[in-house]
Each structure stands twice: as structure tokens, then as C-alpha cells.
Length: 155
Length: 155
DNA sequence: AAATATAAGACTATTTTAACCATATATTGT
DNA sequence: ACAATATATGGTTAAAATAGTCTTATATTT
Ligand code: SF4
Ligand code: SF4
Image (cartoon, rainbow over all chains, first blue to last red; front, side):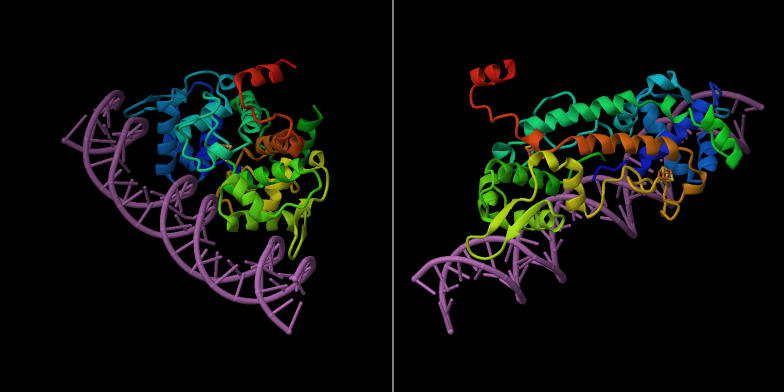
């Protein structure tokens, strides 16, 4: 099922928020309250993002998180890898790095005749996921009124 | 997790096989044996493809399946929709048809500020999935030797 | 020392996926 | 008519992934 996990969505919401604060330290509590989700989940997500070097964390009182590189340098692909622990794979046997994993546990591997096209599709997907960045999540403001919406979209 | 389900992979393998037989009736048993997977699974997959009008089925002895339209007219998007019962959705609130589903059961919907970028990403995904067809699963032959591979790729 | 904040892992419940089993229906050929 | 072949359809079960909660440890500031 081609679906982002909730954790990935929370990560994107968090990164969007941190990016909007432009360099200021942001705590997990603040993000959790803004999004309206439990603190524990956000803390775990931010922790994973930190592990992968997407965010930088400052421990202790007055601590928090900030981005380790600019929004345009954080791709959707990076975020997914950070949250899921490995790069996105459309099928078991094809990863971004290895073209074709003979050690995969797919039980039809030896008879499979769609590995080559799957590799092509995986490549297209990778291109898409790396081309989308946190910057793409910042361009549209949060609309409050219809008129604001129209004005912004007309620009 | 951005991953195709096994059923979708079996569907693609089946369609690739039926397409390669170019108009001849193919039975579920034949496909199951070729792929090396249980008959029941393939039967269910073919049934779902039939329901969505991708394949045509002929019941009874000497029956089987054939494509209802040419391989280039069967998109990956069609196959996923057929197998999963509805079009692929990257997130709960954004579908290919409805821009933004206010009736979705996401518990952060009202605070969510990534719906617009998600709609853009969904559109890109849809474009990709509809642009890939069963024909793309037929162009590359199954390579048997290295020399064949090189010759084919150099063309 | 108390308060604040992140780090990290264990645990549970729910949902999704994968596979299997059973039965009904349709068609062909003898 | 009847046996053989083949699809149609639903139910059941087991495994895996997801979502969320809870707990404890560690670091920093005041
Ligand atoms: S071998 Fe074929 S069926 Fe198995 S995971 Fe790879 S593409 Fe899918
Ligand atoms: S409202 Fe936001 S968090 Fe909820 S499904 Fe839609 S995009 Fe994801």
C-alpha cells in the first residue's frame, strides 16, 4: 500500500514547524501542542530525525531542536529513511543502492520477470522523493480567510 | 511504508504473462505454475482484475483470462486500484478525486498544515502511476547471458 | 536540588497483509 | 446426464507492520 506512515507525516509537520521558526530552538512539547498530538510520539519522531542528522538536539532545560541544514537540503527521501530506518523500497528485492538483491526472501525471486521494470520504477520513485524537500512544505501559508487565500494564490 | 503489496506484484506478473501470450486464453493454473505460487492466490488476483475490467474471463472448461485492452492502456494505477479496491492514497485525507477529504478520520486534520503540499505530491504520484503501463513490463526480455544483456542494452 | 528537556527501549492494541480453505457456479466434452 | 475443467466468492487464520502508551535514564539550566 503506497501510503506514508503517520510517523512520517508527524515528522514532516514537525520539520515544517521547526523550519518556520528559522533557527530558534523548538521543544518537543511545543510541537506536540501545536500539532495536537501526544508528546511521546513527537519526541520519538524528533529523536529519529536527530539520529539521522536531520535535526540537531540540545538537551537539558531550555533545550530543543533545530535543523542541521537548510529546508531545501532535507528531502522527503531523507525523512522517510530517518523514520523507517532504511530507504524506501517499493519491493523486497530492489533498493536504491543495490540494483537487485539476490539475498531477499521473496519466494518467487527465481521465477520473477518483473525485477528489471521494478528497478526502473524504483529509480523514478527515488528521483521524486529526493526532489521534494521541506522547502516544498513551506511555500504555502496557512490560509485563514477566503480573501487571503485568493490574494496569495493570485500572486 | 511506500511498498507494493504482494498481490499487486502477482497481478503485474500475471498481466505481463497474459500479455505475452497475445490474445490466447490463459488459465489461472498455468500462471500459478509459471510464477511458482499457489493457485488460490493467483485465482483471487485474477478475479479482482476481472472485476475492474482489466481482464476478461471465460468460465468453464477451456476457459481462462485475456486482457480487455492493450497493455499500453493498462496503467499501474489501474492495477493498484483493482487489487486494493480503491485508488492509491499517500495520506488519509488526500485522494486522486477529492482534493481534501474533510470527512477523513485523521485526528490532526484541523491543525494540519501539510495538506496542500501533500495534494501536490499525490498528484505527482498519480502522474507517475498512470504513466507506467503493462507495456513497460514487456520491453525488456529475460536475460540469459551477459552477451545478450550487453547487446540488448546497447541497442 | 529541583525543574526542564531529550534519549531510548519496552509494551500493547489495532490494522494490514499474506496465505489457505471451502463451496458455488459455469462450460466443455463424452 | 455426467464427469472434468475452470472461474467466482467468501471465510478463516497467522504473521507482520503500525500506532500509541508507558517507563526509565541522562543531560542541562536555574
Ligand atoms: S523478486 Fe519479483 S516478486 Fe519478488 S520482490 Fe522482487 S519484484 Fe517482487
Ligand atoms: S490531515 Fe494532515 S496528518 Fe492528517 S492525513 Fe491529511 S495530511 Fe496527513
